[in-house]
Image (cartoon, rainbow, N blue to C red; front, side, top):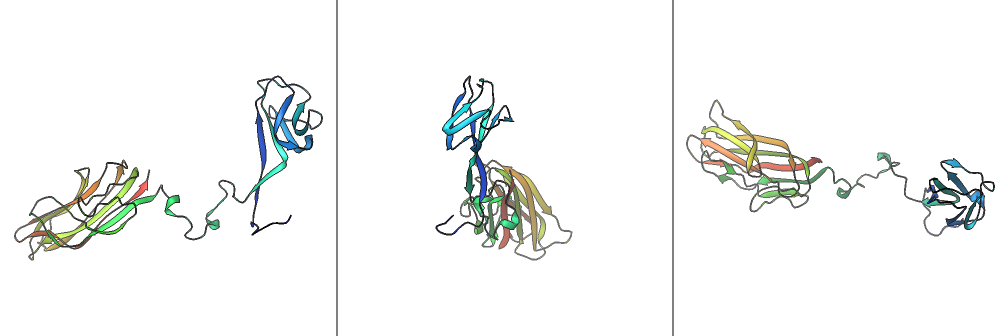
Length: 252
């Protein structure tokens, strides 16, 4: 058959089906016009009927030899009407049929997003031995604009699910051999859910601490923040440039 334009490489064929609401009658109307009874396969109570013997068909008229009842199940397959489409059947596409980079964020909403990562842009002095929120003020990325890098320094995801949250904070004192104890806290909704601490046997000036957790977030009001505490014997407590605070969705 002639074809205008670029002909698809493949087509997928399925046959049209019509379900009937049965009653005590021998006459029914077909959704598609046919030439004769051989163009449909008719099933009554899941048994295929013989064309021209059990029924006749012409145009949109279907006539049965014997009347059905309201409890009968009846449907027809239109053998003369094959429906073609260039869309593959559901479940038939594998990874080998996908072009690299073809799957976009919109098709992976169950994983990874929303996600963000931010770092500390400037060294910050803090009150000695006080639990202080860390201002991760430099965004590396923020897929859904869920991280506040200017005011509250918190991540409030807009999609419910389980998230992996992680952070590294480098902190200590402005003088050598001055750290007594450091703690890094992960807060959810204003309360600590986990922390990491280190009390070195020998005093240090600077040290990094990691904290991480998998948390359920409701996708509306739940938020997470990072807090830091530095206990020094003298000098000024602070946290350093760098460090990281990030999160990404890992499941429902």
